[in-house]
Length: 303
Length: 303
Image (tube, rainbow over all chains, first blue to last red):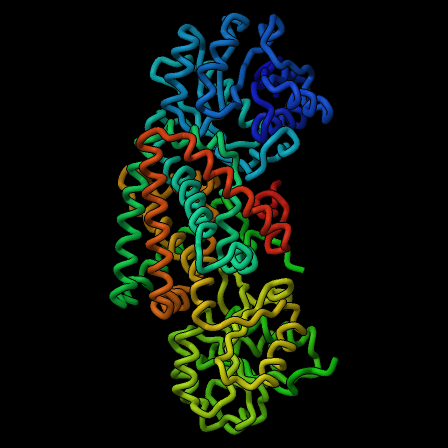
């Protein structure tokens, strides 16, 4: 297969941006990679590990070479990044991104680049680590990448972006931005919010010390600390940008939690057991569909 | 080191009971293992994999050989198990258990066995799997085992039980049962309750299909499905047996969640970022203290 793009610009060289660069090197070696990060120190670190073909802490004439520009910055920073790159873009360039919220990003990009070809994307993949050193080439393999083009989007451009993500190992799905934001509110945003909350709750107790929380975390708590170690700025922006869907899911979660609280208070063991039996089957489906490791304990190493 | 006990009876051959049997075989090979499970089919499965030296679906005269009896049944089943074993126990036997709640178990065991030497224990370790095939010898290595003897407990007996768990690779800590129940409410019981809740919430949506929840679960949701796949009866009993501490922690969690909800609604990005930065440091401490894998994504395999 010939590469969908001769040159790709990656704007933001963190976990996702650097993983895209590595995946391009591995799967599309003929594609040139222009690396951008407004933090010159991040550019230097990316250069030290040879992520891209060139490194830039500001946009210049070289950007016109890029046939696709992928914004890999926090969703709250998309509009500003799009504005400063605008004068240097090729008119034929496809503008894409990797943000976790799509309606707000589409609005931001459309506002900053009214005439551009825009194909928003969200690869549903990541780890709790940040920075150019944290990425790896296989991050997107077997994961889903969701495209959310608006009604009048260029079909040829959508197909090229889909082909690009498939070349990196992802499965591609297309849906409208509002539906994406609702789906991700439950599969990603609410879990992060709850994980941040419980880790905060546990660190604020007066009857139990932080040292005890850490020592006995293998009882279940440590699972939540992983996603609660994700990038603070990225996640601040996600919650503010997908406010309506997050608040809606949070309301449903709180109602369900209150119902369980009541079942415990009133000794309704049958209700608890019925729910706990039902939730087992979802784990099984996730494993069957290749979205998690079948090994116990996520495959954590035991000595 | 000579083995702390010449013969140990394991009552309940599930994940924890079968892991103890395997760990004894590996670390204390001279210790005889009497295996009990009231489900004869479970006894047969345990025998098929050679877990113990003998297998029994009811208690009989052979139990008198056991110098320690470890109850590995759901905490709600401890009293009944202790009652039926009582006539067959040696007067010198130490009675222990592995339950996740200690105050209720101590009361149940004391009630059923008023004159026995009782040293309750809780190895803080496990996986989401159940049954005799799910166990493994290294489950307790580097994990903490908490002993909760009551005020008048036999010190020699406590030291022997501590030595037993250390021989299996665990670190041993002693605390009173009420404090244990408060600590575990936050490090284990509340995380499980929240995981069960969110998995239930996600499976009950009308605007998002179950298939979508599964496909996009790598955004964070899949992490919660692991502990929500834990044994339903065991966890039903935990919540009912540690009701007060669980309801107290749940109340604190709900307050903190409401505060975050409000911060999102009113665009208080600084509050969100402050919390999200603070929670990162706890993950780091857990890894530094060897209570979780330092590898990203729990060391999940990426292709």
